[in-house]
Length: 321
View 1 (tube, rainbow, N blue to C red):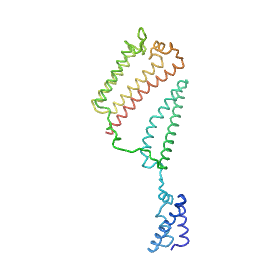
View 2 (view 1 turned 120 degrees about the horizontal axis):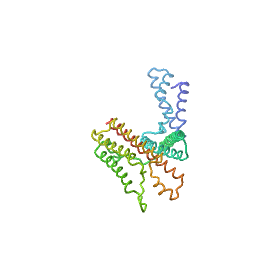
View 3 (view 1 turned 90 degrees about the vertical axis):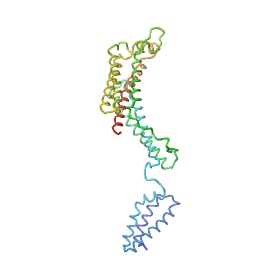
View 4 (view 1 turned 135 degrees about the vertical axis):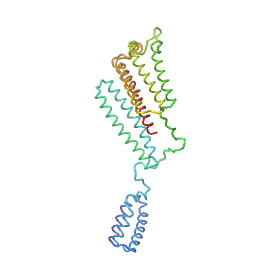
């Protein structure tokens, strides 16, 4: 039998274990622990241990009473368990890719429309991005924490139909053809705009692009198109993206962004007659025109950024392969 000191130490351990359990379960757990601890201590006493050493060894072997209590209560000792971890991680990554970008673009456009300086736009965008990221991480994790604790069934079950398609390296024949077709469409659109027009006026057509861009401004655009086409052919010839191809792709994208945005800011990209015919003559005010200009600028910047990211992503994918 255990000594008073031993009984006191055991009682402290049992009390620490059962205090977080439901009241109706505490009596049964107490009785089970008392019996198992006493049997274990008696076994050590038979081996020659002192009562104090035997009790400490047995209680140490049982481990943290909080962990033992979680086992009795079938309560997880983690924030997000394996049941929901992948769903939590996939949703979190998806939201972190989409939501902060949309928030930053919206804030940047609003700041630009209000005439904020470049520093103010960058500062506001960074502040919003950090705030959105923190909120996404907190609320998504909180939702899955609640689902974990209440044991809710989300209905998310995996099957073989969810297996992803083999990841392409972006250097196949289809990719090259698609790039060349897109570039040809771009060249064709420029000629169509100049000689036929996209917007019927009932008389002489009014081109969208400023006629003053011909020939040298458009020549720069065509040079970028030709360079992009040659890059697509080179990537297809090597059957993979390389760091050199990604660097050239980045330089071409930056060149297009600088060329188009410079002309837009100077009012030399869009035909003034077109703006007057479509907007000004129809009662569109100056503030709205400013918003349209800002949105156009963001679109002209978004495409090169996407192109740069896509090129480096394919390069990284090719290096891993």
